[in-house]
Image 1: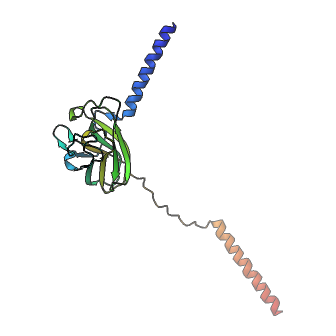
Image 2 (image 1 turned 90 degrees about the vertical axis):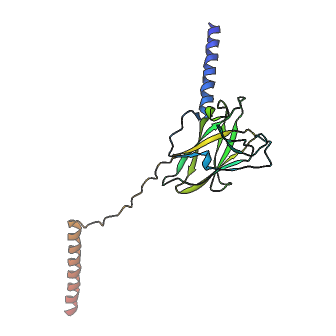
Image 3 (image 1 turned 30 degrees about the horizontal axis):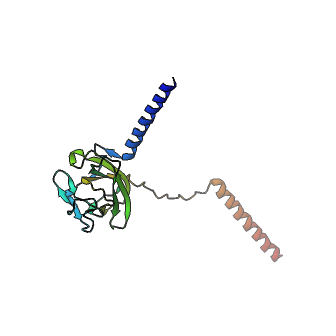
Amino acid sequence: MKKYATLLLAVVMVFSLAISASASSGLYEEMPESYIVLPIEDAELIDDDTTQDLGGNGTFISIVDGYGCGNSSLNDCVVFHDIDFGENGADQINVLFGFGKDEGSETTLSIALDDEENLIGEFSIGYTGGWDIDNALWASTPVTIPSGVHTIYLRFTNENSGSFSQVSFAEADPAPVVEDVVEEPVAETPETADAGIIVSVAVMAVAAGIVLNKRK
C-alpha cells in the first residue's frame, strides 16, 4: 500500500510541475486578441557591432527568410516607429518568437517606449521548439502604453539569441467617463417662505412700536 501511495505522490508532483512550467512560460500557439499587428518588415533593425559574438553568429542582425529577424546578439535592437495606438492605448504586447535551446535557458528582451531608457516591460522566453517561424510561439507580457502615436524599442538583453517575425498589441480598456455633476439650487419650501414672512413682519412691528414710543 505504501508503495502505491509513493507512486501516486510522484505522479501528482510531476503533473504539478508540468502545469507550473506551462503557466510560467506565457507561450501560445495562437495570437492573443490584438488590435495592432506589425510585421518585422515594418521595423528598423539596429546592430551593436561590439557584441556580434555574444548570441549571434558573428554577423549583423537582419531579416532572414523563414525566421523573421535573425542573427541577433546582445544589445541588438528592433524599433517600430510612429505607431498609432488610438484613443485607448495598449495594455499587452505579444511577439511571435522562435527559440531553439532546449536546455532550460531563456532569451530576454526589454521593452521601451519613445526613449530607449524609458523601460515599460520585458520578455523572458524559453524553448519554443525551434528558431524558425514554423516553430515560433506567441509570447505575451503586460505593458502600459498611453493613447496616441509612439515608438517601441525591443532590445535583446542577454547572450541567448532568438528570432521573431510579428509584434501585436492588445487594446486597453477605455478610460471611464466622468460626468460633471451640476448642483440644482435648493428651492424654498412653503414653510420656509412663510417663516421668513412672519419674521419680517415681526421685525417691522417691533420697529414701528419703537418709533411710536419715541413720539410719545
